[in-house]
Image 1 (cartoon, rainbow, N blue to C red):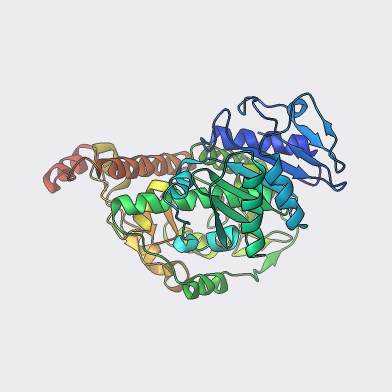
Image 2: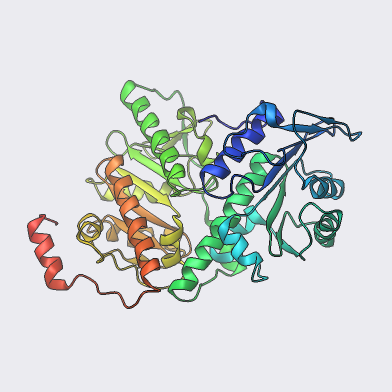
Length: 433
């Protein structure tokens, strides 16, 4: 998969990479949605109308010059008028994404705006969100209504479009894409939480405290070495992160993976690098409690270090936010893995700890992981551990599949879990400790 570097890639190439990700993630259809990028000359590069979104190439992307001249083999998207209108009132925005992702469409057709206080990072990524009334797609009037909504509040970088979808802008295309992906994730999480019970939101104060608690000043060591076993771990981490993105188990703005290297030294993913685009050189080495100079580790590095130091059998950790598991993390409903034998055998009973435990009482999480491989952290993430990274990823997949089954079963009737006696039979038959 191509890494998206907006500083080096041509606007047409950027658009093709992002529309491909959006399509493959099931967040748009063959004919739906459009993306544009404004370059330094003021020219607007935009997806064409009536061309398959699943197979776009750079030659398909249309350029609308600042003087209105159209260059390309296709016509620009019929939604070009509202792209142009948004750029006119957002001089610092150089990218726009419009699509019809299922969860956000659900909000648009019920005239609601997702409350992004459901997880800590979403408020900052998504910003304040507006709501534009319906009008005919591609019409000048629709462009006026959307631009009017953006004009209401200079902080708006996303607008829900009534009975239509969503439109988002960003400083560049990756900024807009992360906002789009995160907002749709919030919408999916909220819907899952509502199916299970009632969503529990974080207060602004809790989110601010979360940000303040994130460590920033790490002790560093110079001249790190990169022997072959260390480099192999970097490649493993990158492969699993990208696989998690492909499987819908991570989004660009969140997800941490670490692997024990030697003793209590380990390698961990960094913050600020979109998960789709992570490369081996981005991975951070943590040695003797210090970080290799010139790099910043995940904000959860202290938790990973504490887990490795207290649990010698744990050799890999994944923290992430799969949408169905997050339904349980944000609703207060117990995640009961006693659905099918595989789920309990791989996960045992999964506890939930309170939001804030990750920086106020790390030891509670550490102790929980001594007797079980996974923990849910309210309004934050799922923490999954294992002996090897592939085993940890398998457990993550099983946990999300179980959560999805439980969400779907909620509309069918009352859960009939595996009984205590049946669990004891599984414990003996499969030698579960």
